[in-house]
Amino acid sequence: MKKPLPPWTETLVPPSAPIRDALVIMGKGRRQIALVVDEDNRLVGTVTDGDVRRGILNDIAAERPVSEIMHPAPSTILADMARADQILLMQSKNIHQLPVVDDNRHVVGLVTMGELIEHRTAGKPNMAVLLVGGLGSRLRPLTDDKPKPLISVGGRPVLETIVRQLREHGIHRLVFAVNHMASAIKDHFGTGEAFDVDIRYLEEDKPLGTAGPLGLLGEAPDCPFIVMNGDILTNVDFSSLLSFHASAEAMATVATRTFEIEVPFGVIKNEGHIITDIIEKPVRQFQVNAGIYAFEPEVLQHIPSGVHRDMPDLLSELIKTGDTVSGFPIHEYWIDIGRLEDLNQASGEYGDVFN
Image (cartoon, rainbow, N blue to C red; front, side):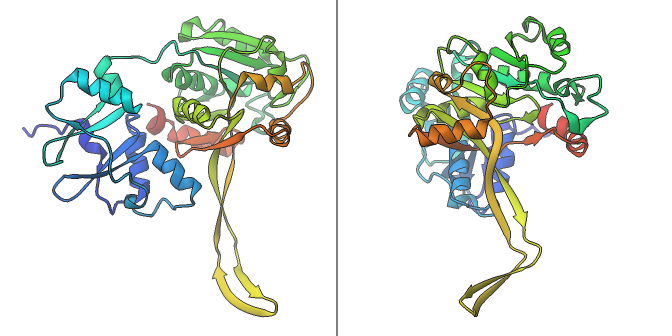
C-alpha cells in the first residue's frame, strides 16, 4: 500500500503556476503559504498571504504566474536545526511558518509556530462588535419570524458560523449590536458560554446605522477591535487583519474585496476626434467595502451615543480630520447573505469552505 504524502506537500507549486493555485493552497488548512519549487523540488521562493494582498493592490491578476509575486529569498529552517533554535528564528523574524530544507535547498517539510510550541490563540486581548440589528427585508418571507443572522446556512445560523470563525482566531470577547428581533438572538446565544466566547449586547432603541451602535459601547475598549456586519460568511484571517491594522498605524482599516464589472460594449479610446483604440468588452476591477473593519479605541470619540451614523460617513470624517484609514484586501471566501440567491449560493458552497 502506497504511503500517503505528508500534508505539507500540498503547498508545493512551480513558478509557472497561476496565483489562483496559490490561493487554493492557502485556503486549505489555514497554511497561508505556498512553497515555490523547481522541477527538482528545490525551493525558489514563497508566496504568503501578504504577497497576495500586495499583488491585489498592484492589480496583478490571479491568472499571472506566482513568480511575479513570490518572495525569491525566503527564510528557511535546516532539517537538522534544534526545535528551540527554530522557535528563536521564527520569533526573531516574526514569522509563523517556515519551509524546512536540506543542505541543497530541497524542501523536506514545513513547520508552524503553533506546531512548535503547541500554542492556541485563545485569550488574545481582542474583541469584535457584530452588527446584527437589521431587518433583513430582502430575505422575506424567511425573515418574517426570524432575524437574518439566525437563518441557517450549512446546518447552523449565519451568526454562529461568524462566532466560530472569530473564536478560531482567538477573538473571544464579542459584542452584539441588536435591534430587530433582539430577543431571538439573545435567547440563542445567551452569554456565549455554550460557544466558548463571552457575549454582551448593545440594544438600539432605534436603528443607528452601521457605525452608530459603537456609540453605545460606553467605556472605550482596551485594544484595537473588529467591527463586522452580522450577515457575512467569510474565512478571512482576522488575525492578519489586526496585524495589518497595527503595522499600518491606522485609526481605521477597511477590509476590501475585488469587484469586477464587464462593460458589455466595445470601449473607444480617443484623442479628440481620432480613435486610437477599441477595447472589446473590457473588465474593470474595483476594491469595494467588504463590511469588516478594524478600529482603534479612539475612534469612539467621533461617534456620539444614540446618534445615527453610517460607516461611509464615519470613515470620510476620519479621512478629513487627517487620521489614517487603510485598506486590507481580502482574497479569502466572502459572501454577503443579502438576497435569496446569495443564500442559495452560500448553502451550496458552505461544506467546501467551512467543514
